[in-house]
Length: 240
Length: 393
Image: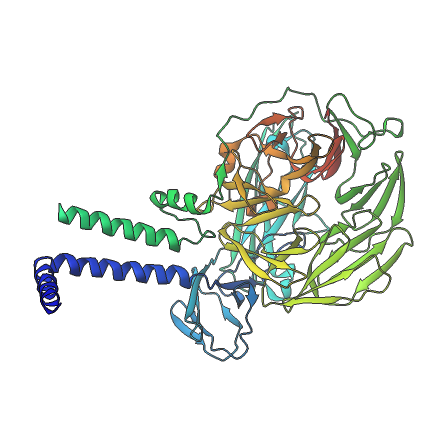
């Protein structure tokens, strides 16, 4: 029995010496595998950080898309945590908010923050140290836009008289009041007078029988912040 | 040899580890890993790429329907495709009842009833609503104004305000109204009852979202769509309060038929132009469709397979110029009226068949599409008027 033990010990030592590198590599691989396996099981605890945000720039009342921020817009962001299909109460948790890697809030339970949009896209990061979680999102910062609503199939106009409406989007104007926008209309390079009802509407009456192509242009500028402006051009074809 | 075995072993372990760690909600961005993702999740199928068939060419859009030739949308089985105009003034939404009665809400919020071609003003509009919703029998209309929601009863002609700071509403198949308040809380109430007694479902902090009922029990909470934002869709079980993140995708836009529990999911491409559209079934299994359209241009229809079983088929208005759409900022451009599309309408089966069901008509930009037993109706965005099509089903 003693002999057998001694022989077995020698065998192990011999084997270990000969295949030391292989055994070591094997152990490293086994360890890596166990780590990966552990991580995969750890994901069974499903954590989802939900960051949402809202800008309060002007959009027409019927617009059902997302309101995008422009430089200087006030943006609100909020965070929720869903853990294993349940909403987690974060009111007593540390919440760190970083805007382009700069800490902007570290209050306990601060699920909502507010910031002013800079001149380009924003990286917003939320860290939940109590849960060992973080998430980063990118919030786009855009230029305002103006749309010429031209509901003509193939951009072809078949009547001498028609109306066009301009619709501004994402302007950062006080109280979302359109009076803070200056609007200029042009058709084929000539300034056009807007309709009496609204600066954003023109009534067009084509009397020149040789007119075929209409280049309609509109621009809008924020009177409170002249850097904020938008321009749109639409080519229409006049079919008699 | 030993080194090769070690390398192979390591690779095996790394791949196995990655496979176990795959999160089915986030498809990999590297193409080489997509195969592993598909083996594990098997969720996303893609219909074979096909060319859209071109429907036969038709003539001009029809003139308004006279009272004597009131279109038959609901009761008779039609034998040929016909297109007709149901209402020749701009509107924002409509409801067609089982008996053929049409309820219209126009651009200033005026409510009009049309019976046998005869118009009756039910209520003068006071302000343009952001949008309206109809109960499933069409007896009540929910008006969503900025920060205010009012319910109009078409029988009693009474208004009832929901005195809350509401930003979004949705109606379930059993007429339960879910609403999202400014503070992120979500409530539901039964608007069939005289006394509104709201029940709080959950207190979220979610900003800038809209609601859609998935069915009578589950509610989607979805980020407002934009191609430049990664949108999220949460699913709330209103009974168990189970909440889960079901989608997180760039340019996410979702439209859902809560009666048939099927929907359409849109996701923008990486550069924010064009995108992909998926048919999503009740188990949230996605099938990518072989064309681009907007989820708001599609509706589901239940078709009888045999005497006991039915299947859902999809009716979609699909823009004719698909390559043009691939360069557009979707869905933003369409929602802001910067983009008008010219559509044909097709019937799509999950086996990949796309059948033209409508004449090739110029000047149709379809929105608010709804299906019936023998046809479909929609608002054409070019003129904001209401059209119908009798279908030879």
